[in-house]
Image (cartoon, rainbow, N blue to C red; front, side, top):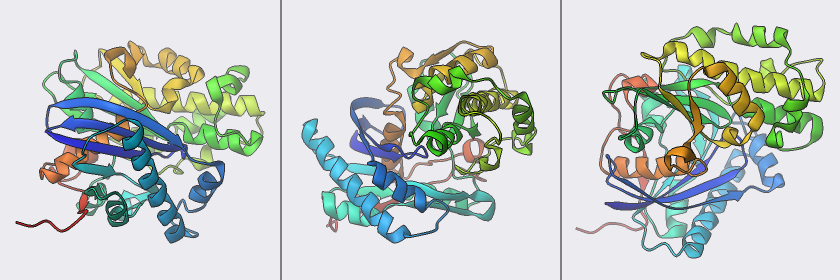
Length: 356
């Protein structure tokens, strides 16, 4: 068993999730402590400024890496975590264009390893994209390990900045793909019109009315008909941010778009699911959860209902994937990213040279 810490800086731009696990990188996972550290408003805006691969990328990458280093140091100290074998460092996605075989997660694994004195695995997506895969989502193998004893077919829905789903069949088959926007468009709408970071508790959406014309236009996008696996960049649906609506109506419409996109994803499942388990920040938005319940037509619960930690799940996944990388096991499959064959990934930065 390996002791690993994973970190995730998601497309919602809200902060760093950290989680410790013990795992063999296969079917054994023991969850440990977890923590979230929010980005300052100032750094969030600096990070936003380099999305798309523009602006002072190198400067922001250094700051991002150092923030992650400080976060790990604080995490290990505050939770009295013993020796760690490896850190899984996702970094932050600033560009994702798999059709052009390009994906870019900023974050310097070697710098982090030097600072921490711990081996670091980073750059989880590049090998998959270079081989012709989508490079996302990468958590499905971890979802399948956690869900080994749960009734199936099962869907695990992660609503971050972008939403993605993992379908797990009765025989352990896995299908995974991005469903559409998650929180990103809602967050951008709120930021543009109120200066806030998000529609906290869905208050704006609950006060508004959905624009059916905007929703119809959204659901007409060819992405929803495309068979999976498939993935998205955070800003791929930016042109769907509505014009001419009040702030509450815009929030309500964008919230409904996210739920409608998830519901549309179910047409691609090999079999209907017994249940949806929801993770990611979106599960904390009551307006979005109500819209999902209305549209999905199957039982739906937050992942906490089965004993998982929805705030830590993605960070745990990258701890798990770091161990799989060290074990030279695949991180992605044809059915999760569309890569032609199961593909190993991740790049190891050693804390110090190893001696025989």
